[in-house]
Amino acid sequence: AIQITQSPSSLSASTGDRVTITCRASQGVNSYLAWYHQKPGRAPKLLIYGASTLESGVPSRFSGSGSGTDFTLTISCLQSEDFATYYCQQYYIYPWTFGQGTKVEIK
Amino acid sequence: EVQLVESGGGLVQPGGSLRLSCAASGFTFSYYWMSWVRQAPGKGLEWVANIKQDGSEMHYVDSVKGRFTISRDNAKNSLFLQINSLRAEDTAVYYCARDGTGSYYAYWGQGTLVTVSS
Image 1 (cartoon, rainbow over the protein chains, first blue to last red):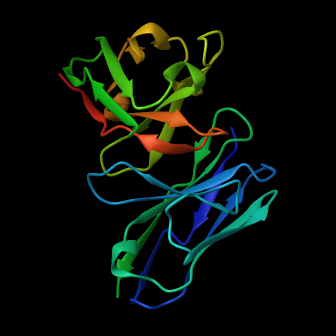
Image 2 (image 1 turned 45 degrees about the horizontal axis):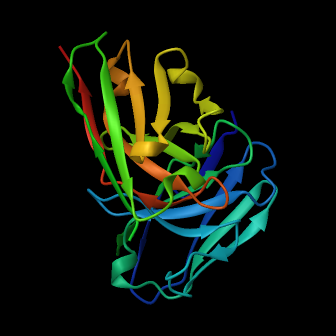
């Protein structure tokens, strides 16, 4: 199975900060990568698919880039509602796999 | 409005079985691949299985092959997961999710908790 390594596993940031999270896949997944965030007790919410396509209704402060094995999620100006755990997911080769998560906490 | 509502979770002894259900509404169920994703307490997300629109193709993560069976009833807009030979490591919230144009998930249910313990 494709292993996805997310980094960092956690970070502390302040409202207004620019935040970058990366995912590295153990083999190429083309652009078949999605990003989610999840708050405690809630289902994940899709942010980006196809590595860089913003899901409808998701604020433009979220952006994604990359292809092949290296991907980045950027939050340009962190808002209070963005404090959550972020996951990437590849859907190129079965079994689909998720990164281990990045917890974004308030500094 | 798309809605996915899971049911069927509960406490079960190791080696036991459960059948999870997901009732779908707000979209044409038969048009979409459907999936199950689980999350152990305090852990990350794990994709479990998916099934093609007509039920003719299914895929599973290796850790559940031979124990879990995904199925669907398009006439009843329902997705199922039969889980047998349960192990402690199967303890998780199980989410039903709808595929988009690819196997990413814009729609999720609220989840149903399966606890495997004696």
